[in-house]
Image (cartoon, rainbow, N blue to C red; front, side, top):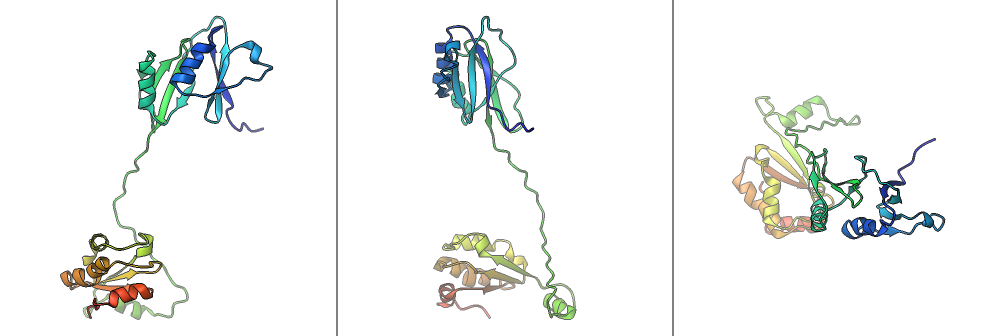
Length: 244
């Protein structure tokens, strides 16, 4: 056996209290009324929809107010509070639950009702550098070739290369400001591969900053565009020759 969900909860109202329940739950809180089955209509009371569940107001005499209560989730807690206060219903705030804002009120029969709204949880940003290492088991390169690619004449690891995949950042690159944001901080590298795979077109301002202006300001860094389609390559080469 498995419990698959919650169908409804019930609160108590006094005999003849259906109109007061309709005003509180229907008019003030905006919950649609659900017709009761004909077989139960003679018992009195009124039902309301609450998302996929229902709230049933059942008749009892007398009603014994209780701290046991339903919690109704809303997408605008401030608006719900304003409507309740305007209608004269009490508001009592309480400590926030993690991820929620909430308060309590009482319906016309003394039943406690909680209203709450989910709030976004801002995830802390973890500072640091991610390093991805991949090994090609089918590579024909030897260790000397790999070391020569990243070491200078003094055999120190003084060369570096970073690959920027534009398609993972977006699909359109038009303005000079976009190129400046892309290049920020890359002057620390000797070579920067800019991968245009998946990029259909680029703007003149973007290319001019990427190929001509920024490299002139950072002559120690070489920009290497790769995987360009015909349109992108034409834009790169048209009046913007690569620095040798």
